[in-house]
Length: 358
Ligand SMILES: C[S@@+](CC[C@H](N)C(=O)[O-])C[C@H]1O[C@@H](n2cnc3c(N)ncnc32)[C@H](O)[C@@H]1O
Image (cartoon, rainbow, N blue to C red):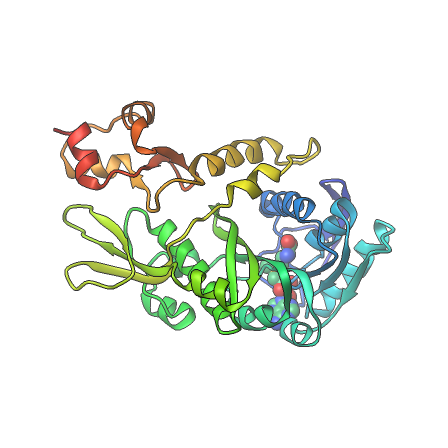
């Protein structure tokens, strides 16, 4: 495999000449996906705001995320990958940036997590992160944060319901807002893995982008926190005929059901306000835009509505987003990062229909 040097953020990195998103394979190739720069820029902002000491980049590929964290944000960073070819390039990348606060490891992530404890753990797998969440819950320190990516969005969004049940012990549902259900199933799964150990978990950020979901969860120790966190596990009840949807603690045989899943907030607004977009970020423009959307929807009701879908159900022409936001402004209505043609509101479907499609 041939490597060349690039710069991402403020960091020099050797990466495979040809993008490789298929994993090691027989030739032992090293994973690298340039599209994830946005995801990595966000993690630098998050780590900056968190100011954590002991950091683990558990599934590091070239080490690009961990090396960037060590170089641009600080802390002591362990950069690990089970693939020996990755380990070699991680060591080269640490050296390339003259870092004395980054250390390469070549272990199975679950082995590493069973031996050591960290303030921040990054889990960025191919596909689903489920195999690592239990050991991450045991390893994460008090008030520590987990950064978790899931690229098995088709499973979480209801294309493969059986796979979702096997992996996440939850029923997905193919609705027009399936992305939000999928993201909430992912968070719900992680939260339930923490509850076993009397840990509460609070999402600092939970978002959908490109082909993946990404969540940052902060641990809150103690039975009291765990119990109040458990209160936020529930279901989405959906009626395919009317488009009605609601969050509930119980299932109900009159509705199609998704869950169990996380019913609480996806964003912590206080935390979002601490994030600082760096001038040098390669994805600065995109981050500024998305951060605005995250802040807008941070205190919105769960479960977004697609404008075109409601218009179609009512056999009417779609209404512009501008018009929606103006007319529904008294009902805590906002845009959502999930879709440029969708909104969140405190109104239920009947309320929306009566205002727009009488
Ligand atoms: C999606 S890639 C990581 C990408 C990287 N974080 C980035 O930003 O470019 C997933 C990596 O996990 C590694 N991996 C898979 N299973 C592992 C395990 N059990 N322990 C440690 N590493 C593992 C693979 O070798 C691969 O490099």
